[in-house]
Image (cartoon, rainbow over all chains, first blue to last red; front, top):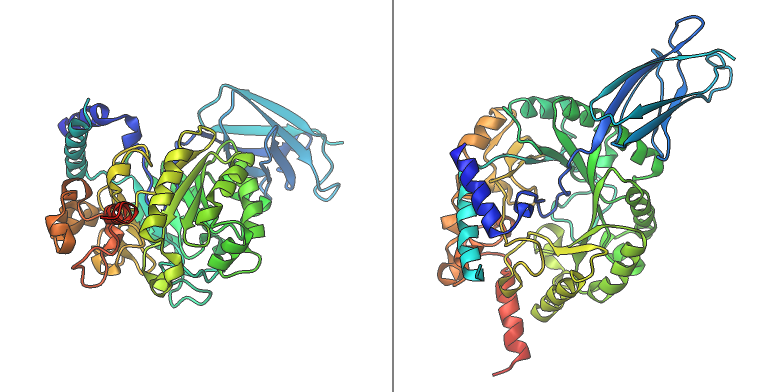
Length: 121
Length: 358
């Protein structure tokens, strides 16, 4: 603890906090982790069964994931004040046909678990 | 505060960093397979590697020995070309589950939109892509007729992400030195925020190719280019931490030179060896994850990295810069280790003597 104090004082006196942010010669910049883990499961509102093949996408962002056979999805995405997730059936009638749905998350910076129910068409 | 006092305090800061030796940057050489055969490759990687890719579980076992990882602890996937592995995303998720972060160094060939999304989904946080010149000189160095087009596409995709802490690295050589201005303009037009410039040190395949090395005068041209470029705030141009640069210190990067290999930077190499940056001579390995506890090795070994007095040999023995340089970047010590491979400060001094004869 004492060493940490000395380090911080010396670092501060010498230059700036840039001293504590570094990258190796052939490495990447450091990651400051401004993202959010979004996980969940998509089920049918009518049967309660999980739905495979639903595209879960982030508005204003190119990221998306497709639900697996358990209807589950999990991805990290950029931290935003308002995060809009779009749930869309993209495989026609292959795993049933469902109405699309949007979910909005406000000021979230903790991992989120969502249970989404989609209505059958 | 005078520069002399600043330098003194910085030396004290380095001493305290060495005593703490907080591990917060870990390279994983996850493969030595590569889809390119670059002229300058320090790792001597190729399409056919003599090593099998290390199983993710073996690496995670080593990672799990780390007690209380540092707040910004990052695993950096390197190679070879890491994207040749199909399980990078799975491994990335496992790293994130452990409260750690991860990033990737790539040549960009396999970095298409689909892979970009899948890497982001898995929690990728930082990315470095190599661009080594305009089309002709990039393809020359990369020894490939279509590398440039692929890299350009990868850069455009990555630069569009607000999430990634992303930069471009360029190995400056005799062919691309005069292209740096045009490269900078292009990078700015693509909204790239950071660009790091390297020189090539004579190891691996680069050892026998003089076209890859800058002359002393050219090296100073590079320093001057960086100094001038840093006045423009549209892109953060910097010289890598590869070496001490004398009078250019703090003018070509944010802080004084500090080689953190073995102090904050560790690695798990393809054969399980425990070391620091992957371009460091493999004889400096401090243990092996297949027989040692990784974190115990980090905590108790690494003496040559944390006490560099042994580098006070050859020209370094009497050098006036030694207090600040301490033998230059650690990767400059290879073979018999009785002489530093490249002395950047000496190159700058020699160039000065050439330009002011007598």
